[in-house]
Length: 148
Image (tube, rainbow, N blue to C red):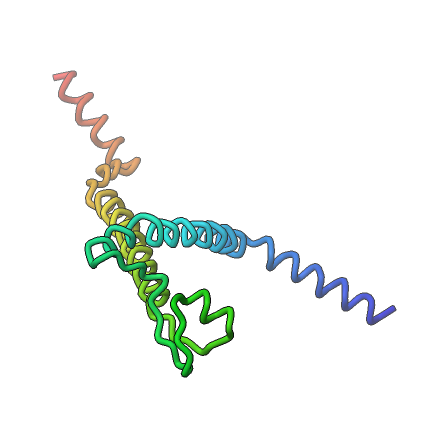
C-alpha cells in the first residue's frame, strides 16, 4: 500500500511537471522545428541545389561520393546496394546548406523580435499621476484662484 502511494505521488509530480507551460511550449517548438527542418531540406535539395548543380555542369550534389572500395560504382545507389563503404560528401554539403538556411531564418526571426521589443522599450512611459495630496493641493489652489 505504501509503495503504491509513492507511485501516485510521483505520477502527480510528473503530471505537474509535464503540464507546465514551459514544457508544453518546448514540445510545440520541437514539433514545429522538425516540420520546418523538413521544409528547409526539401527547399535546399529540390529548389536551391539543382540550379547550382546546373551551373556547375549538371552536378547532382546528392550523388557526390568517394568510393572507399576497390570496385568502381557509377552511382551512389549502386555503391550502397553493394554495401561498399562511401563518403557521401554531397549529402553532407546539402545538410550544411540546410543548417545555414535554418540558422539564418532563425536569426531573422529573433532579430525581428528584438527590434519589436526595442520599440516597445523606447515608447515613453505615461507620466505618473500626482499623489492624492498633490491633487488635493492643486484643487485647493484652483478653487482659491477662481474665488478671488
